[in-house]
Image 1 (cartoon, rainbow, N blue to C red):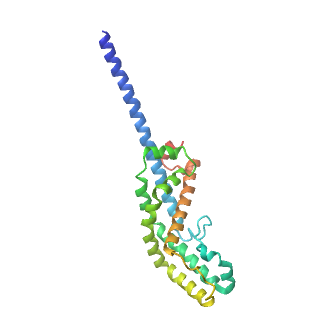
Image 2: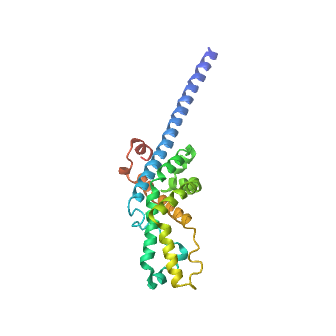
Image 3: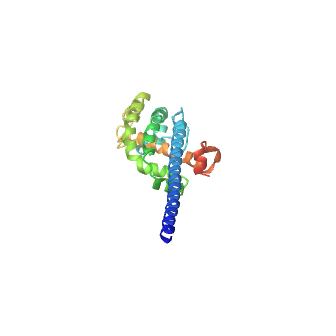
Length: 227
């Protein structure tokens, strides 16, 4: 009798534990899927915002300014008559970033699939931009490598290099002794870095919306995870 009783108890306890483990696994799966969905929607929204015309150029949060070497002398150069060519160069960098941004969706999508349950828990309980920080930490190097040739193509398409060379030629001709290292710039690397910075900045904005605004939780899974 006692032997049969304990066998039944072992079976009951085992069933309870199995049920708890199954429920826990389901919750973990929903959490991970929810965070991945949030990142997917956030990246798509961010890319949509920045890839439209003036998405970079007229957004003060992410507008790509002159490289530091040139920015130091920007006021002097504009007063010396180079304002139009400077503006053209700055606009071209932003246009390249806008043109290249549409390619980021697939690059970001590949990175999202790598998220683990531990990552998801840290993101859910972290800062308002925790998902963006995770994404930035885990993917920046790979994204830079993948994004740079895309940026280079976009730069060629919109004439960044031509605008830069025109500025360099005109300034060097007018100020042959005062240029120094002003034009010692890896332009492709600079525009790539700033374009990715802009994307991550806007991803953080979109993430904050999903966390704080119920209207931004556009799927049932997001509503469940961020309730």
